[in-house]
Image 1 (cartoon, helix red, strand yellow):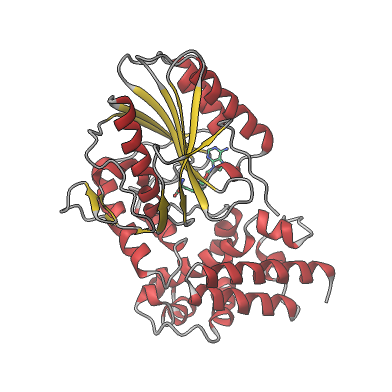
Image 2 (tube, rainbow, N blue to C red):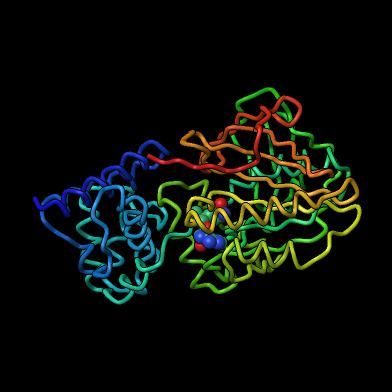
Length: 383
Ligand SMILES: C[S@@+](CC[C@H](N)C(=O)[O-])C[C@H]1O[C@@H](n2cnc3c(N)ncnc32)[C@H](O)[C@@H]1O
């Protein structure tokens, strides 16, 4: 086997492990089969991503190649009969398409569907995956409740890497945090993470989102049905709960009509934080989930500088906060971290929770029992 195929196969195998670990045996099996296809000499990457110049298994992961192809196969299955025989043969196996859920031989069918829809496949895998994961709201919302409790002020949110903007509707979801609940129970979107703690978030806090803005380097207009299919395709096909939550959030988005500005977080932050004066008696909060690692180091540094600069200018009347759900410094599970500036340039940063990457399991500590961190900086080191 060539070094290239070995690296590719290893990278896809690694993704298979993650899929199995994160509760998607169907996707895990497909990734195992794709790793075997590569090991057996079928370099489908060169057919559909001839421009890719990576060399190592690490490059395969960094450029998220496996999830590009996994998503593309799912998109073709979801297109189903409308796309012809090869796509409907694929759909017949996909749990999300009422298929039989049996993964045996599915990657071979996916390869046939890629070949029959080569232009679609090339275009799809050219874009990095964007999983807009609704359940991550279950990790961010208790952080916003803490911020509302601590400041007693309405919050203006600035979401980075908002993708299709589904979390822009997070105050329209209903939440169950252990024995505490927040929101309108009649909401179509219920978020109820496994709450691995007895600590309750402050659901009694008065939370008002006074203003909301969002950006993404590649925003998706979720009001366009073609885009909705794409967002669906990034959810693993055997994860029924995630898919139904997504549908509910897409339905809410038709009403919320999220605006996701087309901008890189660093430039956008300089613009929106530097370009507008803080409103008295309102706390400005930059928030984001699972997007920081996608920014190059220099972009991260510029975004961080813009956040700290806004924080250092905060006052008691116009505080500033940074709330995030991100993998921090090689730590898994991910962490929910809140930093608050309330004047004199002073920042108070605490780890509020550990969380599953999809927000489905949360070990909540809250602000009062949160672990203080010396610097608000988000430093990520990946193997
Ligand atoms: C894994 S998705 C997460 C989306 C969403 N935050 C969530 O948790 O569901 C990462 C997002 O980061 C966006 N992104 C990558 N680089 C960016 C940048 N420099 N500025 C803004 N967004 C960026 C991608 O386009 C993508 O939508």
